[in-house]
Each structure stands twice: as C-alpha cells, then as structure tokens.
Amino acid sequence: STNLPHSSPIEPAVARDIATLRQALSSNLHEYPQKIVRERYLIVLSGLPGTGKSHFANELSQRIPVLIVGSDRMRKALVAKPKYNPAEHTRVFSDCHLLIEDLLKEGYRVVFDATNLTEGFRHTLYDIAENTETPLSIIWFTAPIDVVRRRLDARAAGLSIDSHSDADWQIHCRLRPGEEPINRPHLIVDSSQDISPLVDQVVRMVNLASG
Image (cartoon, rainbow, N blue to C red; front, side):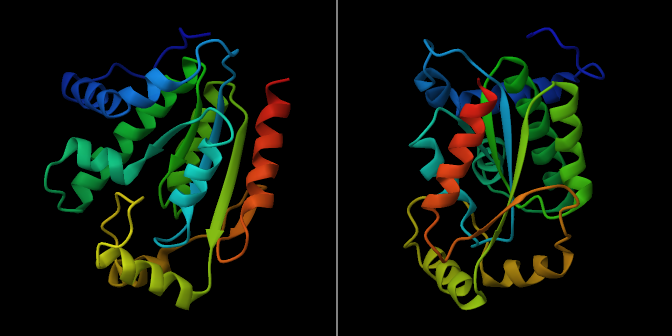
C-alpha cells in the first residue's frame, strides 16, 4: 500500500528537503528495475566510521535491487558546506527517516547507511519498519582498530573513492564511547574478513521475504 499516512503533516521546509534528497537519489530510482515485484525491506547498517558499512552496501547493491540512503551523501545534498553540528545532524537524520518511510511505502528495498550508534536513533527506524509493515534486518559492523585507522587515514588522504564521508580518525575516537549495543537480533560483520558470506546471507533473507 502506498497510502499509509504520515504521523503528522510535513512542514514546507521539510518537504523541500525531501524533494532535494529524492533528486540526489534520482538516478538510483530510475535504475531500480520496474519489472520485478517491489517488496519493501529495510536494512539498517550500524557502526563507527571506517568499519565498512558503505562498502558492504555497495556490494549488496551489486547482487539485488536496493536503494542506498547514505547519511553522508544526503547531508551533502542538503548542505553545501556541512558543519556537523547538532542542529544539522538532527535535520539530516529526520529528513532521511522521512525519506526512508516514503520509499518503503512505495515498495522499495532500502539500505540505510549511517552510523546509527544509539538505540534511540535505531528505535526510530524500528518504528518506521513496524508502521510500514516492513521486514527489518539490522547489521552491526566492526573491524580491528588498526584496520579502521588505516582506512580512515587513506580516506583523509583522498585515496578512498567510494565514500561521501568526511569522518576521520579523530571523529571515530570521539564517537566510539557513545556506541550502544543493539538490543534486537542482528547480524555482525567484521569487515576485515571476507564479507561475501554475509552478503550472501542478506541476499537470501531479502529474497525469502519477497516470497
């Protein structure tokens, strides 16, 4: 069903934000296969910067049709020069949540690629999945600290081509103490290992839900 109501009316400024985010996703929306039966599914990625979330999302998208809503990419669509302050953070995530809810109502499979470090942030996504009657998978990402630092140093040096993130080692260290355990069943990916078996597992889960 595509006519599930929003919990409250959307303000004009927010509606403009959502339109901007849709424009940022427009090429991906056009590429999404129209002939397959759309079966909504939400995959929430969780983990500190440098733990391999975006790489996993990209690998998954090579296997099955999914729309990747990446908070870093969406932030840069909304804000030309991000400040990464609390007000901007709230705006970006609120907008992403509304966009995800809309996409799920339209029947898309969505991967939310963001740190999603606290149960408070994740709970909003749990509610969206429940309200839209969407199957939900949560994946927690980790990697040895030396691997993470090496990746983030490469990113800071401009050697990482598949990332919209500006997070560096300092930001990783600042965020680390705030990471909270996931209180629901979830998959764990150590991205320093071969991720293929976990990609295969998620593909099977999504296909199973699609019947």
